Image (tube, rainbow, N blue to C red; front, side, top):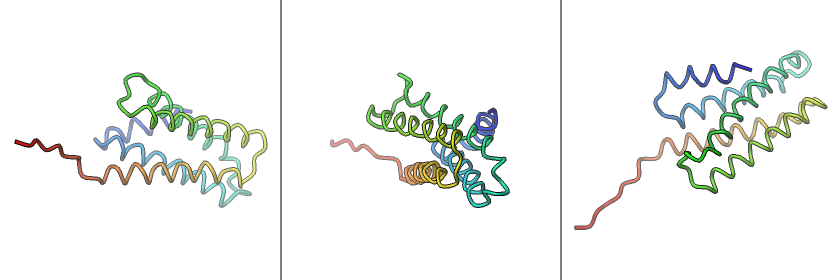
Amino acid sequence: MRHATDAYGKIARQTGNPRDLEADLLLDAARRLQAIRDGWDDRRPELHAALINNRTLWSIFVTSATSPKNPLPADVRQNIANLGIFVFKQTIALQADPTPEKLDSLISINRELAAGLIARAAEPPSRTSSAG
């Protein structure tokens, strides 16, 4: 359970950009889940730990997104919370009836969100001009 929390803290010390940190963690979780899916027969024993890691990561995201101090727009915060709820439900479904196909949505969500974070991190800062 501590893997995601430990990884978050370790990467936070290595990078100053929170979007890069979050993207790295999402991609790491997606890689772990994809490896299990690809080698289902041999790697299925790793499923529980990988799901806990992913769930912990998403718990951090949802907690942050729903914090009153979070500066993101309300609709973005709500979307993150909704994705988190889906991730939690999908995780429970996987634990109740594990099949490799059920990993696809978790892998996809992590990759897509990471891609969005990477794209936003690569954007130049917006400039405000003052007419004078």
